[in-house]
Amino acid sequence: MDAALRILDREGADGLTMRRVAEELGTGAASLYWHVGSKDGLIDLVVDRIAGELELPPPDPSQWQAQLMEIGRRMREILHRHRDVARLTLGRIPIGPNLVRIMEWMLALLRGAGLPDRIAAFAGDLFSLYVGAFVYEESLGLGSPSGEDRPPQEVVAMIRDYLASLPPERFPNITAMVDELMGPDPDERFELGLEVLLRGLAAFRNEDHRPPR
Image (cartoon, helix red, strand yellow):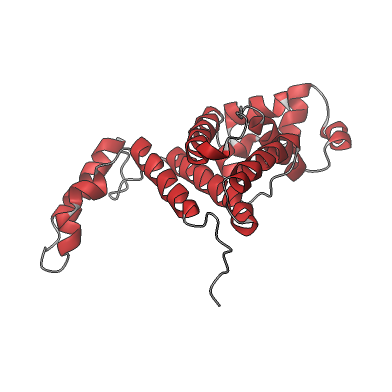
């Protein structure tokens, strides 16, 4: 796992192959397959190893929103530390000792706070999906509408100028809200997204929720 993590941080997800890990260890790929059955199995182990970097406080249901907000921030920091790992987390079912530890912690927190089991079960997946997708998008950078390689601030300025130039009689809301649409920095957007999730979860507290039919 140490060798795989070094390759991931150095070369990214595309460089993380069984052959490259075997080379890093000074052995052959066949020897590695004896211990790890597939590349997917290798990725699962790497993701779980990284999840072990997340330190969890004792769950305190009376502070469930504050604790989840802080855990979201820590998750984002950890994903930023390891190249492409956010991309690898998407579409994976949490397995491994560290990931199930996080799952158990979150369920204890949410159930203790009065959320129905069905909502608590979905909340962990929704929460991790938001953080992972947000960090993955951050890792991609901003593509310029002109196709040229431009600094992010220039790309934002180009998009802002375009929105501001739209005819206000056809797009009154966009032109009135250009600064709000283009203003928040990534940190502010991330925090707002977490707050929206937490407020939504709070609406289900102490309810026997049934989805509409």
